Image (tube, rainbow, N blue to C red; front, side, top):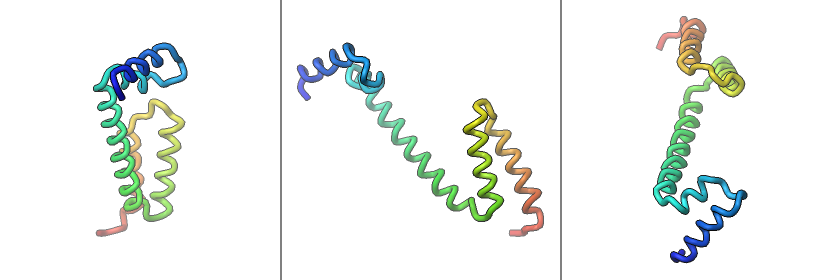
Length: 102
């Protein structure tokens, strides 16, 4: 894109309300495009890690139920502290699998 095209796109971003602010900001402030790309890469890496960990961790009906309840709680209760979820899951796991030896 030439300088004239960049300027016309930047002026279009100022004049329209149909484009998301972040897309237009990336045109007018170049480092925001880098930040947006890094953010997208981080989200992809975290999503991939969640899928791998879930596939290895959810092995029976109890862990599947715990995962579904946890997802539901995170979705419906906005200010729920995550350490509380981890502590409750740990207690449930200790009680449910107390007889299992590695």
